[in-house]
Length: 205
Image 1: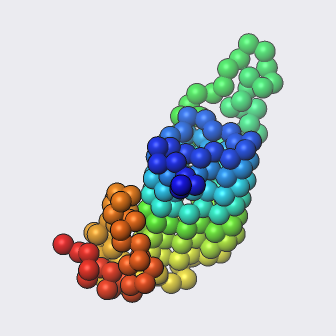
Image 2: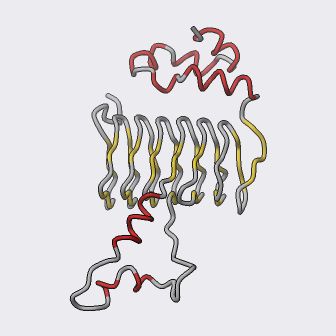
C-alpha cells in the first residue's frame, strides 16, 4: 500500500494550511505552514517549511526548513513596521490594508517540475525555478533560475547545470512528469538504470 494518497495530500502534525490546493501523492511535513499555494502531484516538503504565495510543480522535493515566498516589509514608506498594514492588531475599529496584501499575494514564486530545494534554502517572492533545477542547502534565491541549473550561495548563483542544454531541452519536451502513475510504475527500472540520453532515446516520440 503506497504511503501517499493518490487523491490528495498527506498532512503532518501541527501544520497550518490556508487557502491552498494539493494534487495527489503530495505530502506536507510536520509543523509546516502553507499559505495561498498550490502543490502539483508527487511533490512534498519535509518538516518546518514555510511556503506562501507559491505554485509548486510536480515531483518537487523540498527539504526541511525551506522558505518559499518569504515576506517583505515596505522599504519606501515612513515606516517598514507591520503596524502600517496590520493596523487592526493595534488600533480599534480598523482593518488591514488591502492594497498591501493584494500586492504581496500577486508576487508568486514558481517552482518547476522535478526540482530539489535543499535544507533551509529560501526562494524570494516572484522568483521562478526552472524545471529540473536544484537549490543548495542554505541558498537564498533572489532571481530566476534556468532549467536544470544548480545554484548555491547568498545570493544564489549558478554552479553548473545538471544536464547539457540539448538533453535538458529534450527532457522538458518529453515532460515525463505528466505520465500517469501506472506508466511511472512500469518504467521505474529505466528511471533507475538508464543514462539520461538512453532514457530519452527510448521514450521520445
